[in-house]
Amino acid sequence: MNYELIIRLSCFITLLCSLALWEHLQPRRGQTLPKKLRWFNNLTIALLDTVIVRLLIPVVPVSVALLAQEQGWGLLNVILIPYPFEVVLAVIALDCTIYLQHVLFHITPLLWPFHLVHHVDLDLDVTSGVRFHPVEIIISMAIKLIAVIVLGASPLSVLVFEILLNAASMFNHSNIFIPLGLDRVIRLLIVTPDMHRVHHSVIIKETNSNYGFTLPWWDRFFGTYRAQPVKGHQDMLIGNARFLDGRKQKLNWLLLLPFLKEVRNSG
Image (cartoon, rainbow, N blue to C red; front, side, top):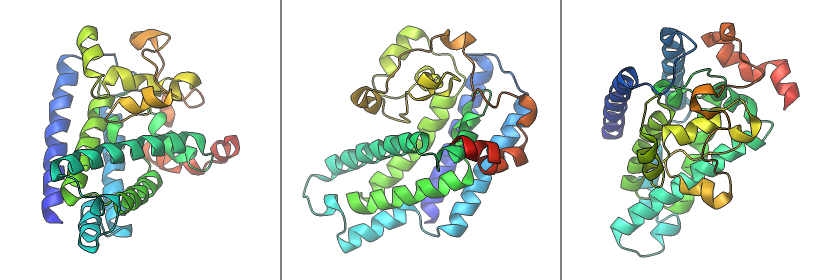
């Protein structure tokens, strides 16, 4: 659907520019790698993801939601509830699905090497939120399509969810400073950069926490919430302990990383 693409692209560009400016004016941490290198890598991967998914999976979640609605598929097409509540419920349920999917990519040896591409970024900024290996994006899209059909989510709820997910991912990966008192309040409603940054620590127990993208409730409910990194936000190391060499951050290496023998053998 053209309108879906236009709306999502407009939101993406607006938020990318806004958060990039915020990062420039009020950064949370210093950077270890040249921004030009990371931005080129991360945005190129995001572009590849978009092209590959559109070619391999010629349907998008919004169009699948429309089909499910027309055919009466899914739970929410059977249960009669007021439309506004249906939209809210669908967005919450889809967000929980993404939380569980994220956990799955961490605990499954076959999937982790693809998600590792996201975790070997040695800095975090707004572009980190769109840096996912194409194979992970394809699997993620398949999971979302299945979830939309099973749930019977409406086209509007899916569009809202997709925009929120993309926006939240860029926001919570951004290198912006938010006063600690304000952060404590905001993270009751949405995942903040300080909350999600813990997830990108090289310390395994911190990596295996704070999986949420948009809503912060799932980590608290499932017991994966960690308030702050042990070493603090300024001193914590970001990345994966086995891949801290900044010279291995070239685009071709990132795309080939999941298929390297040393990664596959480690599980």
